[in-house]
Image (cartoon, rainbow, N blue to C red; front, side):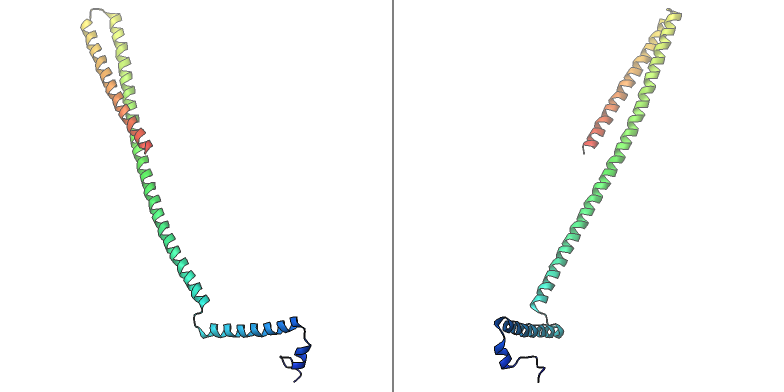
Length: 167
């Protein structure tokens, strides 16, 4: 009986208080470890496991809400990208229209300049063809009127483009 785990009464009385407290603490700790192992192996849910499961469930719910918000955000981003592409397409279309109007204005200017030069030539050659000069003058007025209409169209296109850029 020399190798017993527990001290004899005589050994116990010789120990100082810190050693006694250590022995008692070791016994209580061993009993706690045994109870913990029994509870763990028995499969019953302890309070700690219940709290952990509750925390897991709460985290899972938060993750589901986060994923729903992420999906909603991605949908919003997608609709914004579609709108941006739509506005860009409209802007390109307006730019093409504005380029076409500018080409028409250039043609009208060229025609007007050519007409003016022709009138000057006619005046140099003969002052007797006044009737022909009047006809050319009317052509200039028509080209001016056409140029004015094209200028108005250009203003409308620029106004629409400014509105689209503001959106």
